[in-house]
Length: 413
Image (cartoon, rainbow, N blue to C red):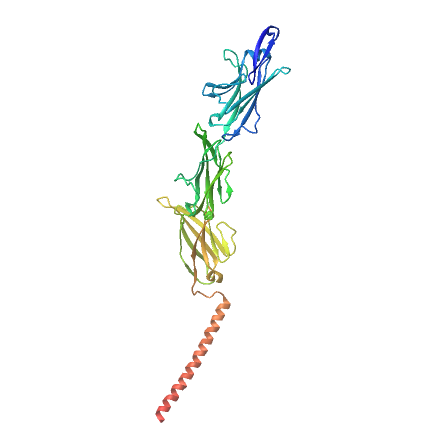
């Protein structure tokens, strides 16, 4: 027979008698749970746990059941057999336990009265024998002491970080840009996001690193590559972050997008109405621009290379490289027949950029006199010439008689 004194709190001990030789110890099992709504908690708040252990009377008195945390490999015991140890300040911690004989269940309830930075990390519940050998699987719960954001940075192409909203536009070139949204100071890691013109980017990668251990703070880096087009001029690029603490931060910058313009060179062409196979030729020096297509615009109508060839218009391109590697394109508009609308309409070569921007260059088709277009025109021209000849003859006769009268007048008067 073994007599054990079991401390149940408030200075009261319970004496239990057990026949250790006649009982077979049962397997010790434990279950560590949170009684509070969440293990994620702010400084100074209360957090309550329950470690429910299945054991018999003999095991309960012959072994040690503890609540502890770790500092590396070192075990820091906070409560043992229902008693707070020196490491656990009673102003910040409390422990109670009950044992139910019928179910062989020991319930240790451990309360953090005021959460501190020291509590961030894992809290353990365990059973050990006199040789400090673990008697059950290690039970642990993660405690996260929430911290708010302290810093937010927006970085474009690795340049100096932007840390606040900007009123003036930030100038960027049309194309792909590396954009980073970096949130610092929170625990756990904040959620960082990037928006362009109000649309969230989902193609980035997220990394998180620890900045400090005590208190624990982290940095979140959302990195993405955004294609910023000329149409985004005036739009906002936004870096936004939110933490589990409940706070949010945001940085907005308006954009001014510049485009590498190609050098367009067009030469005005002369033609007469009805002239066949008239060509308008423009050359394009790409000059680092990213062009994807060309077209000629005549009034409201547009014509593309490789498009359906109509009876009048045909567009073709020829590419070549200079010795220095610069790219050139010749864009040729062939008019199967020069018509009046070609002389009276505005004509443009339009070069389309990868981002949708359009570069334009005007070119003219100038009218000149040419041969007769058809028999009707020839007949009309002929009638006009006959009328002119008749008029000239009449004028000559009148001039003759006037001259004769003037001469006679001088003779007689």
